[in-house]
Image (cartoon, rainbow, N blue to C red):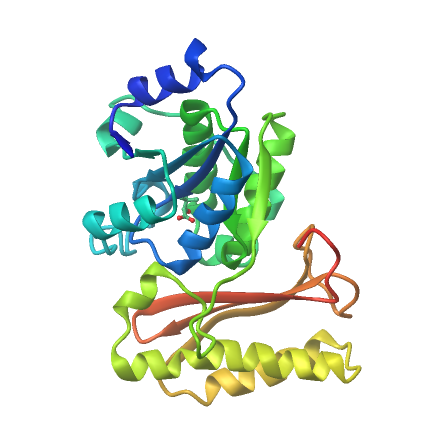
Length: 285
Ligand code: PAF
C-alpha cells in the first residue's frame, strides 16, 4: 500500500501512461475509519483495478463553531483497515496544499444543498462539493463510492457529477449499523456511555415510522409526530430536523409515496448525529 501526500504525485500517477486501461475506484473520507468505510472499500476493491482511499479532514465543510479541531483522528488504525480492505493508494493531502493562499473557487450545487443539513450548516455542502471536485480532478477515478448515511451529501455529489459532466460513476452504499441499530459514524466517538444509549432513539424512531408506513399510513405529518415524540422523550436529545422529502429532488412531501426519504438530524448532548431511511424504495436508493 502506497501513501501519497503530494497532489502532483497523486495526479501524475492517475494520468500516467502506466495507468493504461486500469480502472480506478475511489473512496473519499475524512479518516477515523469504521465498518461503514470498510464496506465502501471492500465494494470498491471489487469494482476496479486500483483502489484509492483519501483521508482529508476538509476545513471548508466545517462551520466556525463546528468540530474541525477535535474531529477524531487515528492514522495508524486507518492504515490497518485500509490494508485489510485491499487499498492500493492512500492519498493524504494537507490543507495548505489543497487550499493555498489565494484560493477562491467554490463549487455550489444550488437547490439540493439548501434544505436539511444545508439549512442547519450553511456553506457545508459548498465545502463538500468543492473538495470532492478537487479530489476527483486529482485522483481521476472511474467510480467513486459514498455512504447513504450522508444521503443529502450523496444527492449533492450525484447532481454535481451529472451537471459538470464528470465521467465518474457514483455508487451509494447502504448504511452500516452497530448491532443495536446506531448508524456508524466517526462522530459516535464523541458520545459518552449514556449518550450512546440515548442515541438509539434515532433508529428507534425511524423503525416506528417504518412500522406505521408498513401498516398503511401515508401522512408525513402523522409519521413525523411519531418520530419527534420518540426523540423528545430522550432528555439529552434535541431535534435539528425531522423531515420527509422526495428522495431524488429533496423537495418537501406531505404524502409518502414511492421513494420518500425520512431524514433526521438530532443533537445528543453536544454531538450532532444524522440518520435516514428511504420508504417505498425505488431501485437506485
Ligand atoms: O463524507 C465525508 O467523509 C466527507 O464529507 C467527504 C465526502 C470525504 C468530503 O470531505
